[in-house]
Image (cartoon, rainbow, N blue to C red; front, side):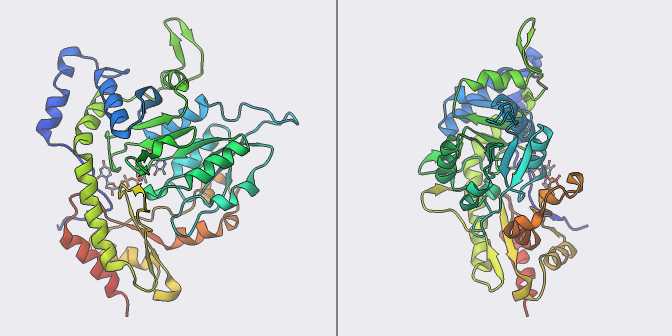
Length: 382
Ligand code: T4K
């Protein structure tokens, strides 16, 4: 059977490099609970991102990291002047299940803001209208690695005394004016899942503006234990293990090279698909930004092309190419939310979710496959 091409493929170091990295674990038998590899990866990442290591904490995955930072920053703990709990979080439904589920699992109420057509991130011009006396925070998403309007969002949050946690699951290594994306908001969450630009198999991190929260975050991820005989918070277990940290240490050595390979593939896709009537490619990296080329989302406009995103998805599938509908459906329409939210209130997100298809993208993707994917798509146009 011919090999199927999947939307992504985990980056891995050579087996020899990984074995070298984990060998010492057979001497120490120390496998988790913030061991030496954990410490080293934290240092390596802080250096790579240009943030103090006191502001960075590792996690078992991005989702748990998001839940922990929501707890550590105390979202939902304050009452407003009427004595009502401030439990509303402004966010977008054009994201992976994790963002919305984390908000709801922490007992908060998502208030969905629409996205922008040009980069699919939260529409900052619509945030202020959604702020109420119950709003406690904004959780925007740097979707596909496209940077949100961070300056505007951060100043809006300051004006209204709100916390900002960026879901930066897609945005590791992204920079604006030479500064890591992690420097914005009160905190940013990064995912190091196997499918991400940089992976630790499963893993994640939080970067904090205020380093005083780091020890709190570390307590939250370790059952709320603060001393040998003290448990101060009802925390869970969200610690990264040593094998994951070792994978991260190795993968980080190859990250810049892999981002360059991704960039080349994106340029190849752009060459073939941009400028085609009815097809819209990702907006690309803006001036002053360093991109990570995490995903390659393409919009297919049925009214212009005469065929839909779903037609392209099926056609590619028949040819052994597994593109993905990231992100369809909108999280606000999930069955588990029992029609609690009205997707019509975010019309751009609703439209984009029905038109978007994320094409295969990973460092080893061959030029011939990119050509084949584009030829299949362009061949559908009469
Ligand atoms: N916020 C946002 C905006 C996110 O996108 C995510 C995760 C999170 C928060 C939460 O972060 P984590 O808790 O996951 O750290 C995948 C990933 O599982 C998920 O991490 C990611 N977003 C989401 C966008 O994509 P699925 O359900 O599409 O995964 P799956 O298993 O279908 O894999 C997709 C493709 O990746 C496969 O076709 C092949 C490739 N793959 C997959 C795995 C598991 C590999 O090459 N190696 C692998 O080990 O969710």
